[in-house]
Amino acid sequence: MPEPGDLDTFSSPRTMLGAELRVARKKAGLSQEKLGEPLFVSGSFIGQLEAGTRRMTPELAREIDKILGTDGFFTRNCQAVTKSKYPDHFKEAAEAEALAKAIREYAPLLIPGLLQKEAYARAVFRAYQPTATEAVIDELIDGRLDRAALLGDPTTPLLWCVLDEAVLRRVVGSRPVMAEALHHLANLIRSHRIILQVLPFSAGAHATMDGPLKLMSFDDAPPLAYLAGHTTGMLLDDPATVGRHFLTYDLLTASALPTRESLALIESVAEDYAHDEHL
Image (cartoon, rainbow, N blue to C red; front, side, top):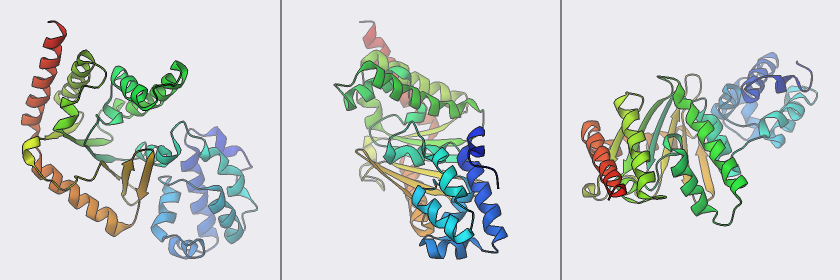
C-alpha cells in the first residue's frame, strides 16, 4: 500500500483510491459482491468505487479498512477525494461526469451547465443568489466553466442533449446574453461536437415532464442516472432503475425535433435575440 498522502500527488485521487481498493479486495480473496454484503451495498457499487465513478465516504472507508485489514489506509486517504468545488448535492455527479464516455441530458428550463457561456452562467447564479458577493458568484462560474472544459476533447465524452423549447424562449440575463448562448449551441452542433434536439411545445405531454435527467455511461463501470431538484440531487445506480431512465430518454428523443430542424430553430431564435439587440 502507498503511504498516507501518496494519493494527493495524483490528478485524480478518487481513481487512484479505487485502484487501491481493487488491489486490496483481490488480495483478500473477495468478489465485489462479497465485499459489498457487510457494507450493505451492491457489488456494482463496489465496482463503481473501484472505477472512480462513485465517491468513498469516510464512514464507508472505515468499514472497508476493518474488513480488508488495511490499517486505516482508506480512512486516511479518502480525505483526498472529499474535497470538491461543487455543492454537496451535485459534487458526486460532477465528478462522475468528468469520467463518463457518454452523457445524455434532458434540460427542461436551463441550458445545461456543460454548454453555458459565462454571461449566461452569471445570470443564472445571480438569480439563485441575489445577495451573494461578486467573489462568490465568480467562484461558482469558475467551477461551471471548468466543467465545460470537458468539451475540449474533440470526441469524448459523447454529449447528447434534449432541450425543452422553454430553454430557448426564457430570457436569462438579457436578449444579447441569450443570443450569445444560443449561437454557442449552434456552433457546437455545426462543429459536430454535440448532438442536440429541441423538444417543441407542440410535442405536448412527454416522458420526462417531472424534471431534468442526466444519464452517464462509462467504459469500465455500470451507467448512472442523476435526477436534480432545487438544491437537491440523487445519483442512481440500481440497474433496473437506470435502465428505465434510459428508456425514458429514448422516448424523449423520439418526441423531439430531428437534429437539423432543432439547429434551424435554435439559430432562428438566436437571430431574433440578436436583431432585437440592434433595434
